Amino acid sequence: SDQLPSFPQWHRYTELLQHHTVYVYPRMGFPLDTVFPGMIGLTALPTIDVSSTEIRKRVKNQQPIDSFVPLAIANYIQENKLYIG
Image 1 (cartoon, rainbow, N blue to C red):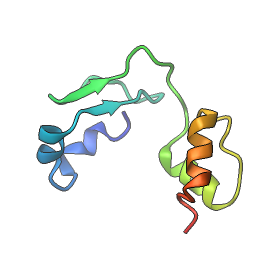
Image 2: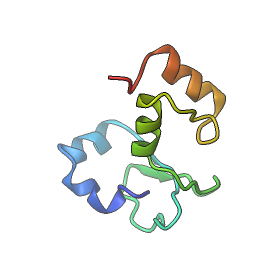
Image 3: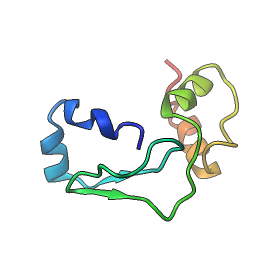
């Protein structure tokens, strides 16, 4: 949800919305008021106070992320060597 204000500045964002459903996860301090058509705000989920940038940084620095993401996600990131380069 922290990316919603800048979403219209994303490259070809309208095409993204036309071809894909975009799920918006709530983040503390960033309400889901401006969800665009084609987006689904995940309002029934708890808000989190960590950014994807922080997750990527922690992975790159070989720091644990298990308190921020489900185990299956942490395993997927590790198995596919995401964010290490």
